[in-house]
Length: 290
Image (cartoon, rainbow, N blue to C red):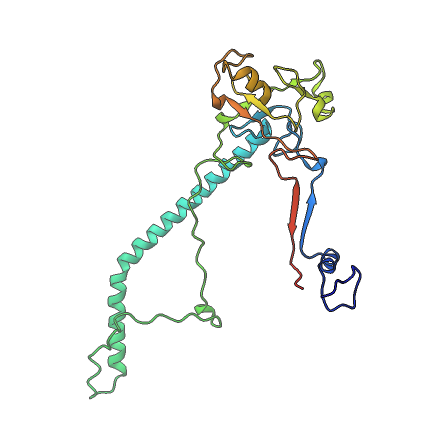
């Protein structure tokens, strides 16, 4: 098989380059785009509002939120769960009443239907056949009307959707785990330049806003950080390994530390290297066959 040129249109073989060119022109296939720096959330931004936090809190999994945003989200989830729980309990009570009513009236309905059927057969059967006093086999229950889409009275109807029992508590919008307000930890960033107002501090570049509370190193998406639960201070993981691991004590509050008190802060990535997130956006479209 001979090799075709990139712009060959008279060949009998549909080459790989021609398929890629037609796919890009027609909008079919899989499209991969590398995310730029503007598409990555900064380490000090809320996971819900995607804006720099003024009153930040962190979950035990390390996701940073604005206090107002996460509290409003959890309250909304609790209200929704309470509403769904009431609807589920109401439907459950109605189903129990229907089952009890069917169980009580089942015997009476069978007896009345059998008597009506026997009287009908006696009236319609000619005398002398001897069949009027007998009930056909299997005629204890009269056959119900067959469903029909043409007769309004016999049109089948769909019953109410059976509700599932809702969950008991709200979940974190990022990790999907159970989350309570008592589990939120207040975060205190150390500003790079003291004395600045919150508006002027947030107007600076993310890498120039905050520093490590122990070493003074600048914080950014490329720097792994951790939050100390007793004091809420943000430090680098390098400082944790070098300064905190030997004594396991918070130098700012003086409280003893455990492994659960060191919360690694979830961060975004840079435009060149990943930091726990995927930097490639993938969009699948219908595939054009050769």
